[in-house]
Length: 123
Image (cartoon, rainbow, N blue to C red; front, side, top):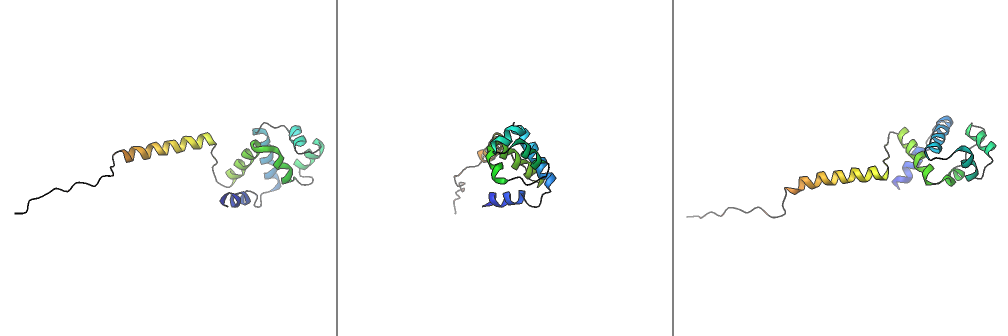
């Protein structure tokens, strides 16, 4: 549910130019040239070029065909514009391991046993 709400925010009132810039950069980062992207989306390259220039609309259904590499880059770009940081899986794993190591050091000095009370003779 949270992911769906965040996805809606990414599309919230961006300018056409901003979306086009993010699409172009995401394609580049994903290693897709514009011709390959057009064919993947079942579009004529000339039509795709017009859409990228703001003539007509860019279909989210067609963009969905570009695959996870494109979407990973595109959503990361949209998130950055909204002030979020998206970590790659390897970076996230490293960060979690570092936190676990720090927590482990702090807990190493702790014990689960109850402290022993000193017995006193009452005389």
